[in-house]
Image (cartoon, rainbow, N blue to C red; front, top):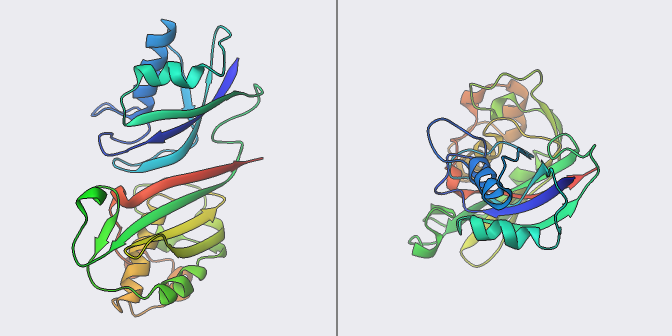
Length: 244
């Protein structure tokens, strides 16, 4: 019985999604909850890796249960064994061919930027703070340059062994969520290591006139040193995933 789970988690106390030797991960925490509930180990497969401190509003994973279980009761049953930093929002039975990672059509991330004279204590480890006023219109124009099929080598951190750095971005924009909170939202068929965080940092550096090259020029040159800084992990949220 293969089940899909949609998770909501605060990444602050975790070393990321994937099980690691040095630190507690979200995956390990969920596996422990499954074992507490069923009395046997249950393997959980996630839709994507996340870095330490990255949050999720709808993280998708799947698990194979050895015995049938009331799917309506499963979220509450798992939440009973989970810390408050991780919540199962919903669960559903899926075909055995469904895969949380490989069945995904696209992913949407959000990067939150607090634009205010002083940082709010309620957004600590939740949004990146910028004190000087930001031009939202200019940020939107800059973000739109990411849309399309491009080689994003300039927006990938080192240390990633992949075959291709080409990705297709379907939407990229900046949305004011309130008078002091901005959201850089981007949807693509996939993302490179630290890509969204580098994009967010580049947008901020461009709007602050710290980068001489335009985003299109940075894309064309395929040189990481030409892009902006890597924005902190705590402002990043996996927002939603669309499946085939």
